[in-house]
Picture 1 (cartoon, rainbow over the protein chains, first blue to last red):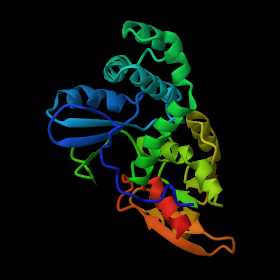
Picture 2 (picture 1 turned 90 degrees about the vertical axis):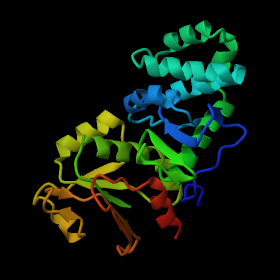
Picture 3 (picture 1 turned 60 degrees about the vertical axis):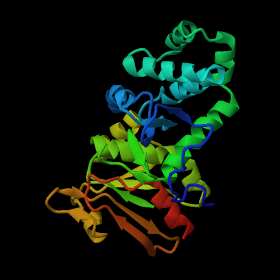
Picture 4 (picture 1 turned 180 degrees about the vertical axis):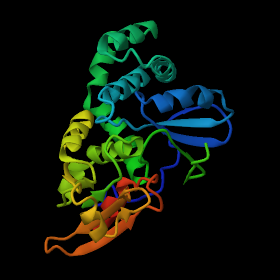
Length: 156
Length: 119
C-alpha cells in the first residue's frame, strides 16, 4: 500500500490546468463548494499563475463528481472551455443538473455528443481522481486549499 | 482507526468525515476500519450519517458523557467534546499510534491515516 501516504504537492505539470501569469498558486477546489465559489472571483482577478486541481467531495456535495467530469470533458475539446465552464459553474451554483450542463456546453460551442461521452469516460474519472489523490497526499482536508512554493498557503 | 471528533454537523467535522469517506475503500484495502466517535447521541449520528452519506460506523460516547474520550486522553474539558484525534488500535487491542490535533479546528489530513497504516 502507500499510494495515499504523505507526499509533497506535485509541482505544476504540462497537463495541469493553468491560467495567468505571476507567482504560482495551486488551488484544490470543489466545483460545488460555496466557499470555493466565493473565492473564485478573487482568484481569477489576482496577478497569479493559477493551477486548478480537482478536489470533489462527493459525500458532502453529491453533484461534485459530475461537475468535475464536465470540466474535464470541456477541456478535452478546448482548454479555454475548461476555464469558461468553471467560471460559469461558480457564478451559478444553483444550476448543476445534467440539463444545465448540456446548456452550458452548447453555449460554449462544444460538441455535445462528445462532451457526453467524455464526461463519463474512464480517462476523465482517472484524471479527476489523480488530482484528488495528490491533494489527499499533500494533506488537503477541505476546500478551498492552496499551495505556494510547494507549501500550504493558509493565509490566502 | 478510531476517529474522535467534536460534534456531528459542525462545519469542520463535516469536512473531515466527508474527506475520510472518499478514501474509505483505500483504508479497507490497507486492512483497517475507520470508526468515528463523538459525544453525540446515536439518533444524531444516524441523521449525520444520512446527511453526508457516510458509510463508516459512528460510535456514541454520550453516556456517561465522554467516558471513552477521557480514557483515550482525547476529551477537551473546556469544549465539553472530544478533541480531534486519531487512534490506531491493532488486532490485539494495543494502541499503535495516536495523533491529536493542536486545536479541534485543525483537521488531520487523511494522508496521516495512511502513513500510520503503512508504518
